[in-house]
Image (cartoon, rainbow, N blue to C red; front, side):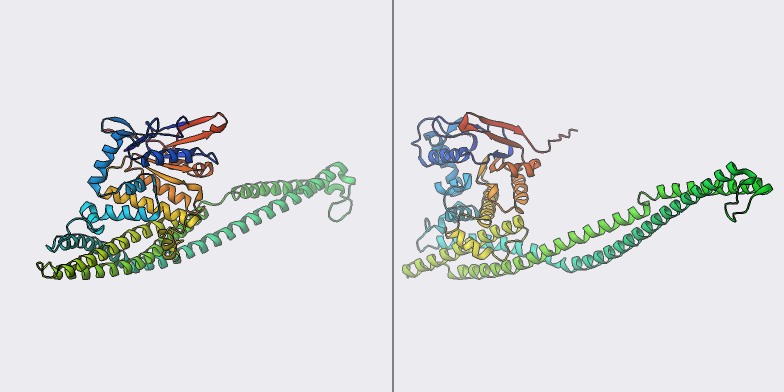
Length: 492
């Protein structure tokens, strides 16, 4: 199901993705072409085999296949059967189609597998022979095992909180001492530099004064006045001139020394530079530890929720093992018990999906939506929220979680599309989201997103390819360019 081309309309422009890989960005400001590409894909996918004419193309098992044709339907049916997905759920996984409830249903089906998804939906294995209860017991045991692993992981992380707090306190103390040393060194350097400048100016003034006295004494000779007492020099003119010359030469030598000293102090001394570098390094270490400690405290809240989920699963598993299937005496009671098991399994699966999306939202926003997540998720899951920065990052988090669940379930995804433009995101979230999509592209051959020029220009190193729109409506075209930071191949 790797998309090799998208087409806008029956005769519109074609987006050729055959040679693209990794994180691919469609860069356009306000051109409607992206929406036309998605509309063409959605229309062809929804035709259920009745699509005619050109349209989106995928690389099938035996070559290119047009989406919506009978050949495409045959390949799609095999994928749906292998992973217990419904058609609309695969559309949600593949290109973000449908409402939020469809995304969540797809996530639940991928989490439980084909048999578990069928059980949740009330299909297969009903009866009073215990098969439904046995199936539910198997999947509840799997959920409990995963939940126990998550609790143990979070507990290990929480055990390190005390050590982190001690390291943070020590790092802050060392950073404060280093900053104090650097500030003291800076003040001493400034004082010494100012003293050198002042002394140099004094020696220059004195040199000019002595040079003037020496010049006037040489010109006036024996009849000239003494520059200090004002009396006529007479036969003392020679010795006075010699004394002035010696003093002037001494002042010149001292002035040169202070000039060199001033020049030496123009740049920061090596020990001061070392103190400042150490203070900066310790400050950065303290900030890093503080961020890690904040993340661990957030994980502490996740630990409480994970422990509650585990307790509920263990209770449900015990009830299932004790409920058994006792013959056909009370089919109505058995049916009611099956419905109860299905409801509990469905509720727990939804909680697990919600927790997974919650973790993604916290990571993508740096904890910004930690307190607002419950209400935000409830509104979005109910289909009431489709706009705003917070809903945008929630949708991206849900799509990433959905794709990762598909990969965990063994679904071989060769391409996925994130339909909403990244410019809808909060400015502080964009870089983290693009980085997360780039990581996702390491396991998915093609991850296609829409990005405004300012978003693509901010983190070009995350994209492998960029498609830039050049006024298609006015006769322009689509220009593809390589991006990223390149690839290095190491061979032995």
